[in-house]
Image (cartoon, rainbow over all chains, first blue to last red; front, side):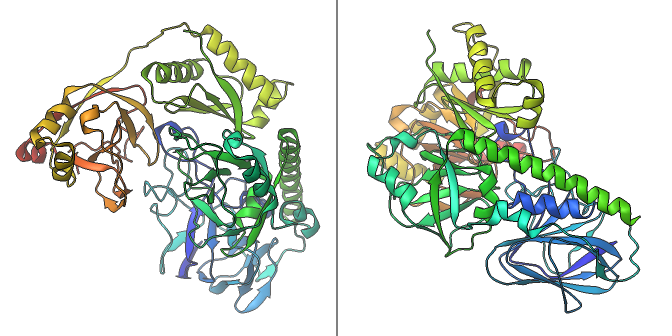
Length: 324
Length: 232
């Protein structure tokens, strides 16, 4: 019940439930870049949403399936091939041993998620199995997966043949997370009123590009430069995934899954949690624009997402039980 | 002391209580005392709180909270924190740990710093070891302690061009702050020495030696003493 990395993607790590309760030691929570795709990949194989999945980003990958497995691949910007035959994403797939799995990079997305029934085996560190590359702990030896690494599944599975199960997540229902891929909705944050009036306008009307200097810690943006009303130093203060910081040169950075816990740049906006998967899936070079949203609107969207995921988990369970 | 603070959202599940925008012992005391009180008397769904120089972030699970209270999350957490602040007696100052940290003062930036401040290297060492420092907060890297206040005579700004790799254990200065690199990383602080102590060890729980509120003394050691104490 294991797989062997033949050619990992540019950034391939094991991710799981964020590591909570250690931020006061400067240890960030981490976890998946696209939490919706990550949770859904787990639900499709009957797992809890936070079990260990493989996150593959930016480029194509090849994996040799060594034993029978029930897997699912989700995410944006990839196609799934098993022994060179195309299979759909967002659907559970039975795979026979000695199958070559390929996730081929296409357009319109950055991260793919590969889940297995029972989850992947990973090192637990401080209550979570997610990789912390800064402390070099959790996941697979605290690091990015490399060629020839063997990753094991937690449970055995027996597949009669390689093939998709006859049900999947409705692509329509996923549109609530991924439609309008360039519109990123934000709430005001702690230092939003530091922005000059014109900069506040530009923030919600200008077009920003995702820079090549983007990674799991943060997405740097380029575009119109913003400025504050008066130059002030900010003493270091907590930041969180989705925090939009204004750098001294006038550019913006949005903190992502592996962000540090504190920062010293003005926090001028906060990307709503419901739009973080969409932003995570933006490739360097892609254009985005921001839209201000009130706190209560963000709360409603948060609630909608939570309800949708809870219902999806139940219906996947039901479908998998019917198969038995 | 009448507390002044604002309460706002960092995102849908994080509230930030800000007292000021400055490095100040008394303000940091309030942050740390509130942090402690919150850990002792958490609210439903509370996950953790993160103390910084002059603000405290409060993380919670919204689903857990909504099961326990019909109030909107912001109103509930805001009310809860205000209530805690009212119960926090003025000038509370709970017991702080005192920790001594050995340093071999052989930092790469020491000669330039001495030149720039027109001091002898020995004088810099004497000044750096003369005062007790407060760990105001941890951040930047896992286990990185932000400490102060550094004597004005050696308070040198960050380097214009950060180093691509500062070795673990390096002791640095940035303005009125002093810090220790818990692991090797890029960094812009002026390096004055290194400690043989592992201040971040992932095999321990908690992995960080220091925490916000600790009182720190540095003392100078020789190369031989450093070698004997070396945990790396």
